[in-house]
Image (cartoon, rainbow, N blue to C red):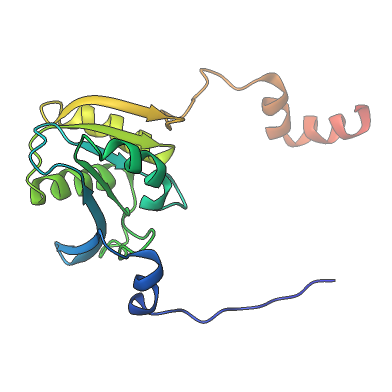
Length: 175
C-alpha cells in the first residue's frame, strides 16, 4: 500500500527550545536570519569555522565542538535554508552565493582569519572560500568534501549509441 501524510509547518519559536538552546544565537545578515554558535575562548586569534553538508545543520559538528571548544574558538552555523537559518532572500543557492554568505558572516562575527572545515557541501564551500578569499582562510579541514563536477572529454560509446534513435532501437533487439 501507499500512504500520504503531511505534518503542519512549525514556527521557529516552537523549535528553538529543543534545537537552539544556549549557546545558540541568531543574527540578521542582510535580511536573513542566521542560526549560529560561537563557542570556546573568545580571544582565540585563529578560530575554527565548521560548515555542515546538504540536508544537515550545525548539529553535525556537536561532538567535534564539544572537544575542540575546550581550547579553541569554534564557530558553527546553519547555512541558508538549512536547520534554523532562514532561506536565502533571493532563493539563490549556488556555490558562489554560499561562499559569499560565509564570508559576510565571518566579517560580521569579526573573524579576519580562520581554519575552515566542512563536510560534503560544507567542504566544497570551504575550499571555494579558500580560493576566493585566501587571506581569510589559514587552513582547511575537508571531510568527504564535494568537488568539481567530472566532465569527460568524450562520451563513452554506449551513451553515444543511446543518443542515436536508429542505433538505440537496434540495440534493444541485440542486447
